[in-house]
Image 1 (cartoon, rainbow, N blue to C red):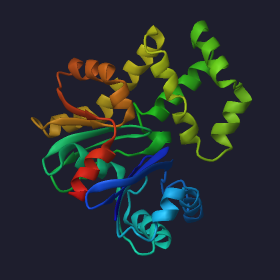
Image 2: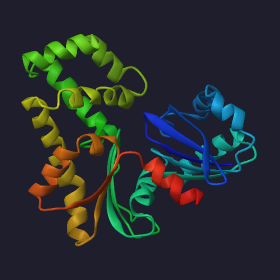
Image 3: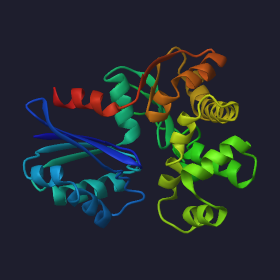
Image 4: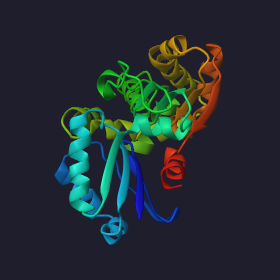
Length: 280
């Protein structure tokens, strides 16, 4: 049995296969080794009966995780997974590599990731070339769901959110200023808290103010990530992976058009392409 896993900071998608066919699947809380330690990871795994029941049958695990950006983090995560899946050989890579394999397979291309976090890289068909991105939810992640959560909360707290949206925000979330600041600055996993507000954007997608925030976020993303890549690797196909890219495809395309760039593919769930690649 082979397991393929794609994990952002918020959600991890699991597919378990036997002879190339999916025999079980589940979602767990995101497993990002930057934010969750070995004890918490094991707690997450033990809460999922599907994984408990199949743990001893899985012989290989291909795990693509947000936060697995250094050799040390990859080894730590692999060791933790091996302690739960005792008879499995574990391969760990970061989520951007997984996104690149899902979009490009063995071909070259520029891969933009827009999910709970954001990043971009050039894939040479085998590996990602080093870049200076990937600064996380405090210093980076422009255009991601946690970025949009951040700008929404800032608008609400600074009283610049239009009245109709403010009314919806209060009704939907029932949060006040002290609660928000406490959750961000004094509680763990503030990035997950920020990500939880993304659906507010898709629910109010026709509102002029929401469209403005989306456009500004994607413009920052292009200026920071995509344009430097497109300039350096001219003529390469551009792919996007992630929930934000897929659910805001029209707005993303508008920004790409503004910069005369063509998006070849947008993939919402890279786990499906990774499954095809690593189990066939």
